[in-house]
Image (tube, rainbow, N blue to C red):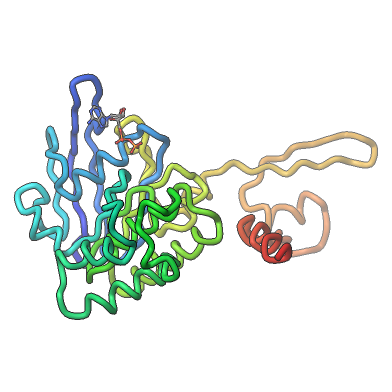
Length: 279
Ligand code: ADP
């Protein structure tokens, strides 16, 4: 088995008034998209800041690519891309200059081509020469993401990269994260949007500084209770809990069919189709 990209053991971060992380342990396998999912205030940003060495834990240990993020912060920074939740850009510089600045900290050769590639990814090529202060909030966020991804990296750590991003671009972002993963990178994405769970290979659900559950989206979905509601022509209604409705439904209906399956188009596809149809 390959060693995990990230190992976190009993991680605690206490502030004077609040315990932001109350003992989180998890391992993030290399080469996956790993979601940190939880409501606002759950501790996601605190966790991420501990991963990148921006915060010193109160207790427990963290290793990213075998490196201690606090002791060896700058060695680690060369190998990771970090998009913080608080966007830090130079307002008077252009989009391209900002992204170039982030890239120049880690690479020399090939920087211009890398800047062009990442600006295309965040769909800001046509605004490349605009000063950042002329951009909308969502666009600034895209510049920040571009800055995080411009240099070659083994791990991308992205704090709510899709919040405030419209559905079409959000889909492009997730496609981009999959491309990064398929190229061998580990991608860690935090989100408070529960619907994004399905985009990840594995997720950690966090709440009040604790890990609630850690598993694949498929296993999470399988936890959901299901029941079939049958309304008869005589007006009676019956609700029957089912496990695998595909095989149990024919028996309930007393028909000679092996399986019945409902195939639902994803909501996102429906919305995008409507948007495309309205152009
Ligand atoms: P999330 O990213 O999931 O929204 P955070 O990690 O930002 O959550 O916050 C977790 C908890 O820690 C919250 O209660 C927040 O108010 C608190 N917190 C975060 N940063 C600080 C800080 N610098 N000082 C005091 N409390 C903080």
